[in-house]
Length: 417
Image 1 (cartoon, one colour):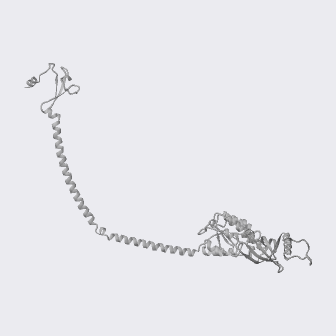
Image 2: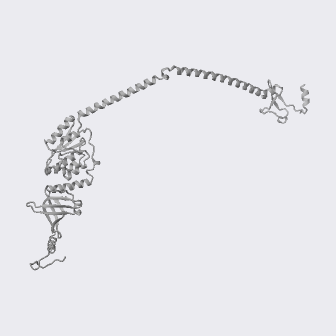
Image 3: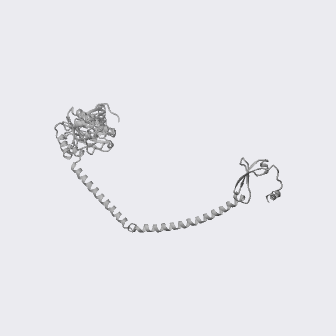
């Protein structure tokens, strides 16, 4: 549609469309503005938010729209009643003749602004993993010494000390007094945390304050304090005692207690309860031991009642009879083997005698040896005049070889005759 530059007159009036276009041109040239007001209506319709903002001193109200691209960048939460600063650009919808603020940024004012900064810090610390459950350390069952950071002579200090000593009279404390609100509080609490964390005797640290309004609790959301607590090696219990305005120290601590009294109860066991537990355990152990002994007695009685143990002599008697039979059989077997062995020895003795050289000598033969001990087997083995040693059946004698040769065996036999 063409925008007419000529002025409107009674003779040449503008059409409604031209008038709307002229208004839109004026609005577009206005650019972006920062506006302060109070949200009176907040309607989140998924990707887009529609609402209204009212002047702080009058009943003037304007509509606004938050598109998805801006909504996704918002870190703070808003609701009706919040005082806000809105960075926006006006948009005029010519067809409907309505004027709306297109929001480009929105921030809380005053306490709302502090809440917004706190929420951004909370998201940063959560992204870094400082709130992760796997970082939480377990508290010792019975701490040797408890570190306590609190205001001097405060109700929180009295509640922690009184309730802890009621539960476990011998418990010891190392108390660090600090301011718990104001400009110096965060630095003092941080220094106390560092000192107690370095103390080797301190097993757990309680940071206690008896509640307070939002601004008074900002100390315990200080970034330096919270990061120091996250870096401590000693378990930390946060006992600030404010449920609605939860400080960041509650999120980073290893345990959050609802009140200082609750902190004392959760850090120190009740001596009476523990004594009752010990008594119950002793009773259960005694009962189990009694039952176990009774079962073993019954088992022994069952074993003793068995015939094998009730009439034990039959075992030795039966074994003795069996042993006697084995001895008798072994004796007979050995005797038979000895007889057979004797017969075999006799046979071997006869065979040896039949083959013995002595039997040959007994028949009248002799064995001739030369002086060097060699047996004479043929006449060629000796020379005439040589001395021979003759072995006979009943002894030995020496002889000299006759130089006359003997060639006829018969003549030798006749000479013997």
